[in-house]
Length: 129
Ligand code: ZN
Image 1 (cartoon, helix red, strand yellow):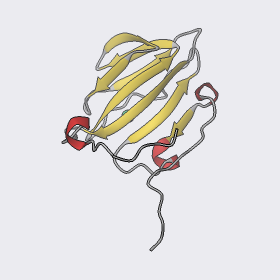
Image 2: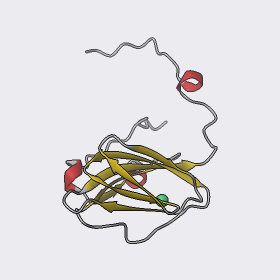
Image 3: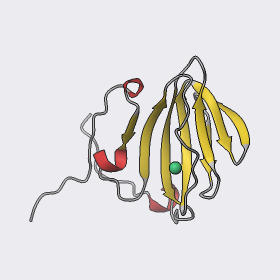
Image 4: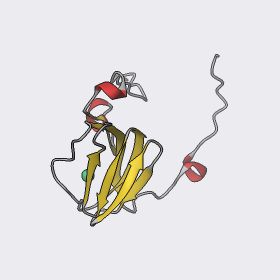
């Protein structure tokens, strides 16, 4: 029987050095789409979009900008987190003087049927450190 690892690792470099990395590809994700993104200062998403089935969770890690959500514009900056329903039409724009960096987690809306309390298993194995 082949010994298969139970984890994947991808080194992406400093987040500020990337424009876009799709972790579904680099980590072979099976239940979520996660991307790391950076919109340069003064730039915007090339298009507005919605989704058929997936909700998105945006986790802003640096910079500031504007989030256009069904016609409503909200300011976002480091520490902002936003959940967007599939049908919501969305677009992002970075501040004129600062790039906007964020992770976007995409999962099927309504698919979370267990979370840490129901799914976690405390192990008896102790790490060596
Ligand atoms: Zn999307």
